[in-house]
Image 1 (cartoon, helix red, strand yellow):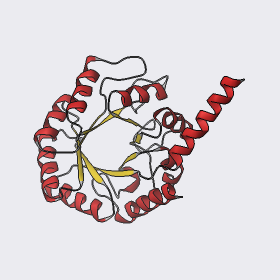
Image 2 (cartoon, rainbow, N blue to C red):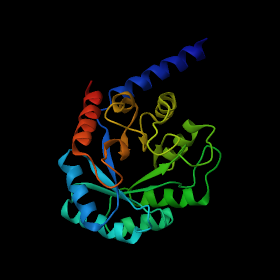
Image 3 (tube, rainbow, N blue to C red):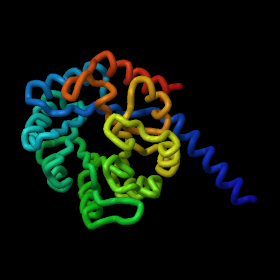
Image 4 (tube, rainbow, N blue to C red):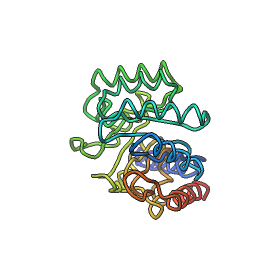
Length: 244
Protein backbone atom coordinates (compact mmCIF):
# COMPACT_ATOMS: atom_id res chain seq x y z
CA UNK A 1 0.00 0.00 0.00
CA UNK A 2 2.81 2.44 0.91
CA UNK A 3 4.71 1.53 -2.24
CA UNK A 4 1.57 2.08 -4.30
CA UNK A 5 0.97 5.50 -2.78
CA UNK A 6 4.61 6.43 -3.26
CA UNK A 7 4.49 5.49 -6.93
CA UNK A 8 1.25 7.42 -7.37
CA UNK A 9 2.71 10.51 -5.70
CA UNK A 10 5.82 10.29 -7.85
CA UNK A 11 3.65 10.11 -10.95
CA UNK A 12 1.70 13.19 -9.87
CA UNK A 13 4.86 15.18 -9.13
CA UNK A 14 6.48 14.33 -12.45
CA UNK A 15 3.33 15.14 -14.41
CA UNK A 16 3.14 18.47 -12.61
CA UNK A 17 6.75 19.23 -13.50
CA UNK A 18 6.15 18.35 -17.14
CA UNK A 19 3.05 20.51 -17.34
CA UNK A 20 4.73 23.60 -15.92
CA UNK A 21 7.93 23.37 -17.96
CA UNK A 22 8.62 26.76 -19.47
CA UNK A 23 9.74 25.87 -22.96
CA UNK A 24 9.17 23.80 -26.03
CA UNK A 25 11.43 24.21 -29.02
CA UNK A 26 9.87 24.10 -32.49
CA UNK A 27 11.98 22.96 -35.44
CA UNK A 28 10.38 22.85 -38.90
CA UNK A 29 11.95 20.17 -41.10
CA UNK A 30 12.88 21.51 -44.53
CA UNK A 31 12.80 18.88 -47.26
CA UNK A 32 15.61 20.05 -49.49
CA UNK A 33 14.71 20.89 -53.09
CA UNK A 34 17.54 23.25 -54.01
CA UNK A 35 19.78 25.81 -52.36
CA UNK A 36 17.59 28.85 -53.01
CA UNK A 37 14.42 27.18 -51.79
CA UNK A 38 15.95 25.80 -48.60
CA UNK A 39 17.52 29.16 -47.75
CA UNK A 40 14.20 30.90 -48.29
CA UNK A 41 12.32 28.33 -46.22
CA UNK A 42 14.77 28.74 -43.33
CA UNK A 43 14.25 32.51 -43.40
CA UNK A 44 10.50 31.96 -43.48
CA UNK A 45 10.66 29.61 -40.49
CA UNK A 46 12.60 32.15 -38.46
CA UNK A 47 10.18 34.94 -39.38
CA UNK A 48 7.29 32.79 -38.11
CA UNK A 49 8.95 32.31 -34.73
CA UNK A 50 10.57 28.89 -35.09
CA UNK A 51 13.55 28.12 -32.85
CA UNK A 52 15.53 26.52 -35.66
CA UNK A 53 15.29 24.16 -38.62
CA UNK A 54 16.40 20.73 -39.72
CA UNK A 55 17.39 19.98 -43.31
CA UNK A 56 16.80 16.58 -44.87
CA UNK A 57 17.04 15.25 -48.43
CA UNK A 58 15.04 12.28 -49.68
CA UNK A 59 16.94 12.23 -52.99
CA UNK A 60 20.45 11.71 -51.64
CA UNK A 61 21.74 15.28 -51.73
CA UNK A 62 23.31 15.09 -48.29
CA UNK A 63 26.53 16.88 -49.22
CA UNK A 64 24.52 19.79 -50.59
CA UNK A 65 22.32 20.12 -47.52
CA UNK A 66 25.44 20.34 -45.34
CA UNK A 67 26.59 23.25 -47.50
CA UNK A 68 23.18 24.92 -47.32
CA UNK A 69 22.90 24.33 -43.57
CA UNK A 70 26.29 25.99 -43.17
CA UNK A 71 25.09 29.01 -45.14
CA UNK A 72 21.99 29.29 -42.99
CA UNK A 73 24.06 29.09 -39.81
CA UNK A 74 26.51 31.73 -41.02
CA UNK A 75 23.67 34.09 -41.93
CA UNK A 76 21.65 33.42 -38.76
CA UNK A 77 24.20 32.48 -36.06
CA UNK A 78 21.62 32.57 -33.24
CA UNK A 79 19.21 30.26 -35.11
CA UNK A 80 19.62 26.52 -34.46
CA UNK A 81 20.37 24.47 -37.59
CA UNK A 82 20.36 20.69 -37.79
CA UNK A 83 20.82 17.96 -40.37
CA UNK A 84 19.52 14.45 -41.01
CA UNK A 85 21.80 12.75 -43.54
CA UNK A 86 19.82 9.77 -44.74
CA UNK A 87 22.53 8.40 -47.02
CA UNK A 88 25.30 8.60 -44.42
CA UNK A 89 25.94 7.14 -40.98
CA UNK A 90 25.01 9.22 -37.94
CA UNK A 91 28.71 9.26 -37.01
CA UNK A 92 29.50 10.94 -40.32
CA UNK A 93 26.64 13.39 -39.77
CA UNK A 94 28.04 14.27 -36.34
CA UNK A 95 31.51 14.89 -37.78
CA UNK A 96 29.99 17.11 -40.48
CA UNK A 97 28.03 19.04 -37.88
CA UNK A 98 31.16 19.65 -35.84
CA UNK A 99 33.20 20.69 -38.87
CA UNK A 100 30.55 23.17 -40.01
CA UNK A 101 29.49 24.55 -36.62
CA UNK A 102 25.96 23.16 -36.84
CA UNK A 103 23.78 22.70 -33.78
CA UNK A 104 21.88 19.45 -34.18
CA UNK A 105 21.99 15.99 -35.74
CA UNK A 106 18.94 13.79 -36.11
CA UNK A 107 19.12 10.19 -37.28
CA UNK A 108 16.52 7.53 -37.88
CA UNK A 109 18.59 5.08 -35.83
CA UNK A 110 21.38 5.74 -33.32
CA UNK A 111 21.83 2.20 -32.03
CA UNK A 112 19.54 2.27 -29.02
CA UNK A 113 16.29 0.40 -28.33
CA UNK A 114 14.70 -0.93 -25.16
CA UNK A 115 16.48 -4.22 -25.71
CA UNK A 116 19.98 -3.18 -26.69
CA UNK A 117 22.64 -0.50 -26.92
CA UNK A 118 24.88 -1.17 -29.89
CA UNK A 119 28.50 0.02 -30.13
CA UNK A 120 27.15 2.77 -32.40
CA UNK A 121 25.12 4.15 -29.49
CA UNK A 122 28.18 4.30 -27.22
CA UNK A 123 30.26 5.96 -29.93
CA UNK A 124 27.60 8.62 -30.43
CA UNK A 125 27.19 9.01 -26.68
CA UNK A 126 30.91 9.73 -26.41
CA UNK A 127 30.55 12.32 -29.18
CA UNK A 128 27.64 13.97 -27.36
CA UNK A 129 29.69 14.15 -24.16
CA UNK A 130 32.68 15.65 -25.97
CA UNK A 131 30.57 18.08 -28.02
CA UNK A 132 27.83 19.40 -25.73
CA UNK A 133 26.96 22.19 -28.16
CA UNK A 134 25.66 19.65 -30.70
CA UNK A 135 22.35 18.04 -29.76
CA UNK A 136 21.73 14.50 -30.98
CA UNK A 137 18.12 13.52 -31.72
CA UNK A 138 17.89 9.72 -31.49
CA UNK A 139 14.83 8.11 -33.03
CA UNK A 140 13.23 5.52 -30.74
CA UNK A 141 9.87 3.77 -31.09
CA UNK A 142 9.96 5.38 -34.51
CA UNK A 143 8.09 4.89 -37.76
CA UNK A 144 9.44 2.15 -40.02
CA UNK A 145 11.65 0.70 -37.27
CA UNK A 146 10.96 -2.74 -35.87
CA UNK A 147 8.10 -2.66 -33.39
CA UNK A 148 9.36 -1.31 -30.06
CA UNK A 149 7.73 -3.25 -27.19
CA UNK A 150 8.80 -0.78 -24.48
CA UNK A 151 8.91 2.78 -25.88
CA UNK A 152 9.39 4.39 -22.48
CA UNK A 153 12.45 2.28 -21.69
CA UNK A 154 13.93 3.02 -25.12
CA UNK A 155 13.43 6.75 -24.51
CA UNK A 156 15.02 6.53 -21.06
CA UNK A 157 18.06 4.70 -22.44
CA UNK A 158 18.44 7.33 -25.17
CA UNK A 159 18.30 10.12 -22.61
CA UNK A 160 20.89 8.44 -20.37
CA UNK A 161 23.22 8.20 -23.37
CA UNK A 162 23.00 11.97 -23.80
CA UNK A 163 20.53 11.98 -26.68
CA UNK A 164 17.18 13.68 -27.10
CA UNK A 165 14.75 10.74 -27.47
CA UNK A 166 12.69 11.35 -30.59
CA UNK A 167 9.58 9.37 -31.42
CA UNK A 168 6.81 9.37 -34.02
CA UNK A 169 3.54 7.91 -35.15
CA UNK A 170 3.30 4.84 -37.34
CA UNK A 171 3.97 6.72 -40.60
CA UNK A 172 4.84 10.11 -42.03
CA UNK A 173 2.09 12.58 -41.13
CA UNK A 174 0.60 10.24 -38.52
CA UNK A 175 0.43 11.42 -34.92
CA UNK A 176 1.63 9.06 -32.19
CA UNK A 177 -0.78 7.72 -29.62
CA UNK A 178 -1.13 10.32 -26.87
CA UNK A 179 -0.92 7.71 -24.12
CA UNK A 180 2.39 6.51 -25.54
CA UNK A 181 3.70 10.08 -25.38
CA UNK A 182 2.47 10.55 -21.82
CA UNK A 183 4.26 7.42 -20.61
CA UNK A 184 7.48 8.19 -22.50
CA UNK A 185 7.44 11.75 -21.18
CA UNK A 186 6.84 10.58 -17.63
CA UNK A 187 9.85 8.28 -17.86
CA UNK A 188 12.14 11.00 -19.27
CA UNK A 189 10.70 13.79 -17.08
CA UNK A 190 9.44 15.70 -20.09
CA UNK A 191 12.63 15.43 -22.14
CA UNK A 192 11.14 14.14 -25.39
CA UNK A 193 10.81 15.09 -29.05
CA UNK A 194 8.12 14.14 -31.56
CA UNK A 195 8.79 14.07 -35.29
CA UNK A 196 5.54 13.21 -37.04
CA UNK A 197 1.87 14.01 -37.16
CA UNK A 198 1.85 17.32 -35.32
CA UNK A 199 -0.58 19.97 -36.60
CA UNK A 200 -1.88 23.34 -35.39
CA UNK A 201 -5.02 21.50 -34.30
CA UNK A 202 -3.45 18.74 -32.18
CA UNK A 203 -0.23 20.29 -30.85
CA UNK A 204 -2.04 21.64 -27.78
CA UNK A 205 -2.78 18.08 -26.62
CA UNK A 206 0.82 16.91 -27.03
CA UNK A 207 2.98 19.88 -26.12
CA UNK A 208 2.66 19.62 -22.30
CA UNK A 209 4.63 16.36 -22.59
CA UNK A 210 7.32 17.53 -25.03
CA UNK A 211 10.53 19.51 -24.97
CA UNK A 212 11.08 19.55 -28.74
CA UNK A 213 8.86 19.26 -31.83
CA UNK A 214 10.08 18.47 -35.33
CA UNK A 215 7.31 19.33 -37.78
CA UNK A 216 6.84 19.31 -41.54
CA UNK A 217 3.68 17.88 -43.09
CA UNK A 218 1.31 19.59 -40.66
CA UNK A 219 2.68 23.07 -41.41
CA UNK A 220 3.46 22.74 -45.13
CA UNK A 221 1.83 23.52 -48.46
CA UNK A 222 3.57 20.54 -50.04
CA UNK A 223 6.76 18.53 -49.62
CA UNK A 224 9.09 21.48 -50.14
CA UNK A 225 7.26 24.61 -49.03
CA UNK A 226 6.14 25.64 -45.56
CA UNK A 227 2.76 27.30 -45.09
CA UNK A 228 3.47 30.46 -43.06
CA UNK A 229 -0.08 30.74 -41.72
CA UNK A 230 -0.09 27.14 -40.50
CA UNK A 231 3.37 27.50 -39.01
CA UNK A 232 2.47 30.68 -37.12
CA UNK A 233 -0.70 29.04 -35.80
CA UNK A 234 1.30 25.97 -34.80
CA UNK A 235 3.89 27.96 -32.88
CA UNK A 236 1.28 30.14 -31.20
CA UNK A 237 -0.78 27.14 -30.11
CA UNK A 238 2.30 25.35 -28.82
CA UNK A 239 3.56 28.28 -26.76
CA UNK A 240 0.10 29.09 -25.38
CA UNK A 241 -0.37 25.56 -24.11
CA UNK A 242 3.01 25.66 -22.36
CA UNK A 243 2.07 28.90 -20.63
CA UNK A 244 -1.38 27.66 -19.69
